[in-house]
Length: 401
Ligand code: ADP
Image (cartoon, rainbow, N blue to C red; front, side, top):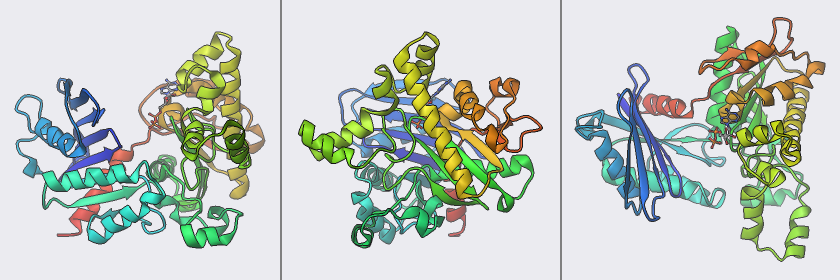
């Protein structure tokens, strides 16, 4: 079965075409600047020549049509006809409390995803555009939705409720949902497999740190707590997001600076974090380069980032009464030797001991970076959210037959 995986943003659409016989990627690509002038379609057939086209793509419907025509293009394509695509899997950010697992796209599922627009106003409408565009261009092809929140639905009440009037939960479902669930679930399973241990017996802290970042305490294979909250703003300090702050700062700043709700949201989501503190960049590579060149603001941004990450690791070790495995994943987690080194340097009280030579190795494979004496195993595991979406889609669609 060939499965097309789609990750649809408000002005972008990422895709990967999988052959599920061997889980190989036949092609992948990205459409950017949908609805703006000069949209860009970048297409990479596996083993073939990468192509970039600049064209007018005004909406997601056209984006999907262009992607399908690229996938079947005589020169750059990887399939003869779109009929070869037997299922489509979509990443959907927010599944609320309704979706505890991936689901087939049917009318009730679509109604529910629309109902959740309120909780993820930037993300869920974009995913819905991708679903509708797929339906229009590939009528009758089954679609599956895979949610960032689903893995975290196992969290107990004490972890997901906020200490605010319960009526806000009852009326509006204000609670912690958590995100990056497909990644946390994937890397925790790979970790157990890599170590040859049953996931049921392990206490794992997964650190998904990219542009956005979240930590999860995975106990017995279940998410028991995670650092992102009702929205992806809570928790770690990130590239452009503030992470945790005293909630009273929000009305205080709004009042002093006469900011609107949108303005304060934009400040906390887009103009904070590493970018705000360094004054230079949200990209960890530029922060560590700046630090190496003696830039005081970059050094402070790095220290704040690392300190918060380490505090969360400590709190999740406390939540689980111990930790057997720490996993680093995503852009920063997989690539930044210095972030891993500095975080682990101050976790010796937990029995963490990093092997500097192992930490410095670069490879796209899961690997151990702790010493043989380390009480806690520390792993670097490349995440693969698209593969999880392809697998769930394949499983759910295969069960239909
Ligand atoms: P997203 O959260 O958008 O999916 P990624 O997981 O791809 O992002 O992570 C992107 C981030 O990873 C970049 O902003 C950059 O800070 C970081 N990153 C990528 N490569 C490196 C590297 N070699 N060293 C340090 N950080 C890196």
